[in-house]
Amino acid sequence: MKYIQLHKSPLFLKIIFVISVAIIFFIGGITFKHITVLKKSSAFVSNSHEVNAELERLISYIKDAETGQRGYLLSNDKTFLTPYHNSKGLVRKSFKRVSRLTAHSRTQQSNLKKLLYFINKRQNYLSKSLYMIEQGKYDQNILKNNLIIGKQTMDSIRYKVEDMMITQQKLLKNRQKEYELTMNYTPLLIYLTLITTLILITIAFIKMNRDLVLLKITINTLSVANEASNLAEIVGGFGSWQLNFETNTYTFSDNEYRLLGCEPQSFVASLEAYLNFIHPEDLEYVIENTKSILTDNDLAPFTYRIIRKDGEIRHFRTLGRTVTIASGDKTFIGTTSDVTEEVYAQKFIEDRNRELESNNKELTAFNYIASHDLQEPLRKIETFLSRLVSKDYDNLSKAGQQYVSSIQSSANRMRILIQDLLQFSRTNKAEKVFEEADLNSLLENSKQELAQIIEEKKAVIENNELPILNVIPFQIQQLFTNLISNSLKYSKEDATPIIKINCSTIVANEEEILPNNNTKYHKITVADNGIGFEQEYAKKIFILFNRLHNKNEYEGTGIGLAICKKIVENHKGFIFAKGTANEGATFTIYLPA
Image (cartoon, rainbow, N blue to C red; front, side, top):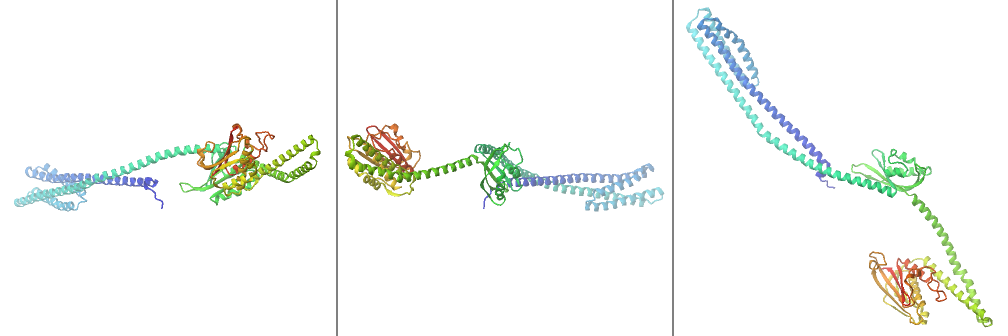
């Protein structure tokens, strides 16, 4: 399973975002709860103060009634009864307010019931006492007893009011404890959650900042790559296009338009628009090939003709394949190359090949003529000359004898020329069958082949141990024969010909005249002490029919060294010549090891 690092995944930012939002909501909830508790606590404090104030007001109204009655009793002035009469309504309102303010407290409601009992009792005794005085007939003991009971009831009212105030104070303290308890852990929790949120947001910011830097680098890289791609398309003469399988929409590169002879993005990219440029004769062929885009992953390359906007006919080659991009969508990417020059070059090559085949047939016919038809009359000429010399040579005049000698010499040169041409032709046309061969044996065969001339010139041929190589045996033997024959032909008349053949293994970069690489070669040198040549002719001597000396000075056709060069080239090697006039020549051969 492919391991995906979470902190490098886009999912990481989403998780942080969700957690941060959840924490913010959590902090908001705690804050709301705290404010609600604070509001309730504040409301309860206010309620407690209002209850206490209203209880004090309630007892004050009762006291006013009591004071008014006492003033009336002392002065018999009814104006003192005004507070008494007003107190009933005021006491009723104040009691209802206290009852409403303590509606959520069962204890206070219970206390209110008892308080109401004492208030009613006190008001009843006040009324009795006042009635007895107004009637003028009363018993002092009864009045005194009523006043004493009224006083006791008033004391009970005070005690009950105080009790209610104390109870309200206790309730307030309990609420304050709850508030303080809530306030003790709430700031810490809010602080911790805020710290956590800040850490998560900081991590997200760092990640986003890194992603933005990476995105900027990526955008810059893509911009450079896109421009490089556009430049490569212009230089390379090709365009690119894409097909989005999800949306079934095409996209053409700028150079795709240029290949069609249009301005970049001058029309909406689509298959239908592109088909309008296809040559009518190739239209069905193109449609048939493009059908495979929807079923195959690859579009095999195929070539067709288009008609550019300016009317010029060009040859295009298209290929492509399906790729899956990062989003998971499949996209088909294709390239279109202008291969007009390649098509024309291929046609030119095919025409040239046909010409070469025709020329080869002519050369084959020439070889046949050279090997049969030309040699046949030459043999007859040599035969009749031989008979003329053996029978009638003495009867000829001196001029006639000279003519016969010239004819014999010319016929001999013609025979040698035909043989050399056939040999060169076989070197070019023979099957190149490589096999392991001992170069020492091939050299010995060449010596045996040239034994007569070696013996005539008393030549000395020296060589060190030669390797066993994978070669065309008869061609390597021909190479040795031609080089030794060349050295013998151009030997000095007053010196014994000495030919030294040596072999060593070298690396190409050790030799200035070879390519600079690490390929190993067998270096074979054939050096002689003959007449040599000027170094300026070192390359010319390998050219067919090229001669450095007059044919009357030295025999030869100028084909032998050309054959040597062709043999070495057949073996993927190199041959070079180095000469010094009147000192000798050295031929160096490099054959791949």
